[in-house]
Amino acid sequence: MPGIIDNYKEVVNTPQRRQVLTAITGGQLLVQLSSLPVTLALPSMARSFGTDLEEASWIVILNLLVLGSTVLLGARMGDKFGHPKIFFFGTTIITVGAVLIASSQTLAWVIVFRGLQGLGAGLIHGNGNAMLAFAFPQEERGRAYAFPISGSRMGTLIGIAVFGIFLEFVSWRLVFLTMLPIGLLVIWTTMPVFRRNAEALPKTPISIDFIGAGLLVATAVVFLMSGMHVHGGDESFTSSDALSYHLPMHVLFVVLLVTFIFVERRIAQPFVDFRHFRHKYFSLSLVSNVMFHLSMLATMVLVPIMIEDGLGKSPIFVTAILIPHQSFGIWLPAIAGNFHDKYSPKLLRTFCMFSIAVGFVLLALFSAKVNFWLLPLLLLPISFGTNIFNTVNNATVMSALPTEHRGFASGMLETTRDLGHATGATLSSIIMAMVLPAGIALMVASESQDLYMRGFQTAALTVVGIMVAGGIIAAFHRPYSETDAGRREQPSPAAADD
Image 1 (cartoon, rainbow, N blue to C red):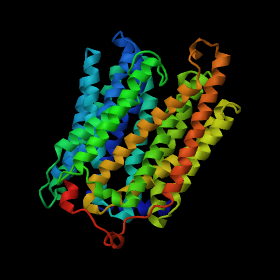
Image 2 (image 1 turned 120 degrees about the vertical axis):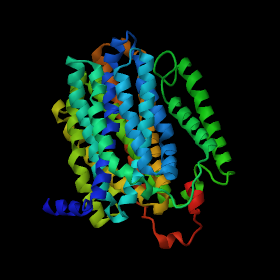
Image 3 (image 1 turned 90 degrees about the vertical axis):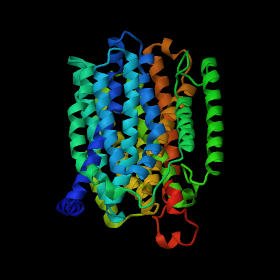
Image 4 (image 1 turned 90 degrees about the horizontal axis):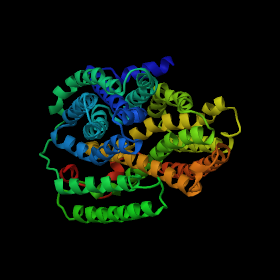
């Protein structure tokens, strides 16, 4: 442990580095406070506004839509105006949005302001990685990325532990007001980095292809919407209501995607320069990122279903099982980052994906057979694999392109993260809908619980297959090399940043 502490002292050996890490860590904590734990407040908010949970779910849906569709735009704006400046605007927007939500008198305004928070989160996500890559060389990024990842996990733990108490004894509005002092603290700690924004400005003027940006936003929104149950009727992918909604949305997504690619390949300075994907190891690392975040969302979707519907426990037991899982994110990223920077093990990400796969196998086979309080032990391989992989993979993706293209790498890292989340949630829902019979809600608990466990097992084993494939892909990755890059055509800096 003393050796690890000394290694981290080297990383934070200047005021500028400490300021960057403090700002990014605070930003990630703030984003996490405004995302996953807020879902805990949905039932309380629905009751407060006298509506049903389906309508209140738009509080989460709009936030995810805006976040997932604007993160790359935020990164490109950082390329043009400076990543610290856009990051600072993101922290301000998400903090102001929290206050506006807490003071809203109608559900419609809450939904609108949650969309505003999604924009702030997109600006933070899109620029934080680029700021870190600018401040730290490749051989130190593993340790540097441990800070914001731990901050993100801390946000989740605060939300799960504290927000539940607020919802039980005070009001859902306090959940959002809690973000005000934290947001103000993050804004204050970001100011020193914001003042040095000129250092991060590009040497040559950059223009943004807003036509391509608009097409990409529309494509991302349709893709995310295509996996959500916003149609009438049952939450299913096979009912008549579902088919009449999901199939046209999937077709529209394909049309928009083809249109986007067609337009971008004919623009001199495109919003997305596809020549970056000629770096096969960069592309492979993005594929691994999608698969990894698919498993993260699958965990958060499937484990509550398994505990509540499969084992017949109340929601408080979900919190009791997931808190140990999330707590690994406080300390394990620091060890993972230090190990990555010191040894650069080629197969570490592969090991992590296989570890996640082992965890899902254990859950599928034994979750219904062991004592309930042993479930955290079954989750242990997932906890280790998740919190090691996230740190190492972020450093890997941000080191897979030349430093001058860090904005594009940052935007794609977070875009594929959101793509993985959406795919994980959608895939889990599809599998559960296929396995569970239509009339399961009418069955007695003893019958339905067995069916829910079967559905969980099928979905978990599907995730196992994806993790194994992702681990094999990760095994073929190599870091970016200037020597190798010189052997093939590279995008010009001007075109790549536009």
